[in-house]
Length: 290
Image (cartoon, rainbow, N blue to C red):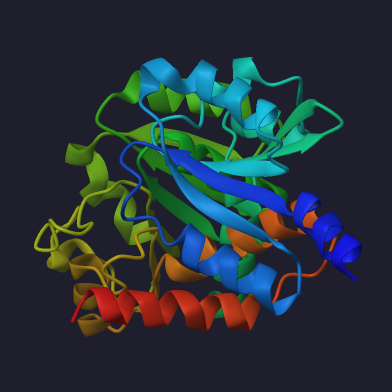
């Protein structure tokens, strides 16, 4: 019996999330409950990694016998050059949020986009043929735009402070021939009236700056779908104001849970206990905000 226990200990799954800052991450809560529910010995830990130590941290994770890890802000793009292999999702998005380590080789995936689309479809229904406006052109926007193009949306407008960055994003992602264009914040008013789905991928409105919003309430077209990637607070000012305009609102929690669920499935080869992960994060968020 003791042998079996020893063996279990040595087979424990070491997992974690690398970011800077990392204290606010809900990933450990979500993944540890999933491992526990599946009876898988192991642990998922927050790893505070400064940008200039990323290369060492990646080598360290391999040396320590990690089975994999997540990658969050600001490392999602930088990490790509440190891995042995990249999945098609990571190449197309130009960003990695999940790394799987097998037999000493590290492979990068992007589960943000598919996680987001799964959550959006659940909340908002069919996405084909919809006009989408995306705020921001960073790593998160990339993953989402990549996944939305696979859903055959009619068109995507990317609003960003630096238009060059948005233009580059279109050049890299638009292989499907969907109508894609860029605009500045000043031009937002012209594009919003044609929008079916408005998505904020920026951190405007994120805890602790909960009074901020990327667009004025009166600019939001009535009755559209408004989605915010932020999950803390669960209802941002943007979503609150969108609701008063009769909009269907989608917070970032669903995307966060599903990107985690896909990562869990890559690491363990088992179906993720999605509803359990969801309730664990919900409980932790409520606890934190009271």
